[in-house]
Image (cartoon, rainbow, N blue to C red):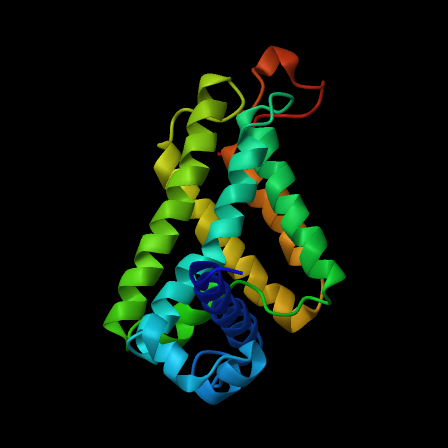
Length: 214
């Protein structure tokens, strides 16, 4: 293995272990010594990659988000799905994984927003950047769904994406205390489909269905 590859591997191990440990124990509950031991990296090497624990936390946020952006992008690129179907499939995938993992961890973004979002300028900037990137990718899917006639057009796609992000974070908090996938399923049905999906015109509604909810 080349020196560059070994260096990249050590940095990735630190970030992988750090993300997993912060998901389990929070930012303040995760010590550098524990991360170094889990990643099998000497202390001096840590400061080669990161100037401080605060900088490590900021980079861990970006590292954590990357696979979620990739997976959502892959769903949105699936030619067999419209924009709304892609978003539904993505969130249902996440719900199934959380259920399979016994509802542990939740979302590192939401966890850290509550723990250090107002106390660490570096973390706050990293969290805002991550949330904005996540929201903007969801907004792309919603804008496409609007063009496809699957999502309501009386609301801005970005505003609806904000609603999705906030709703998902709330569902994750309920999931933790209820130890159930029901809040996640309710999010998909009530927020993603219920609040965003375009209602069919009256002539296409089943008889007796009544007027759509506002």
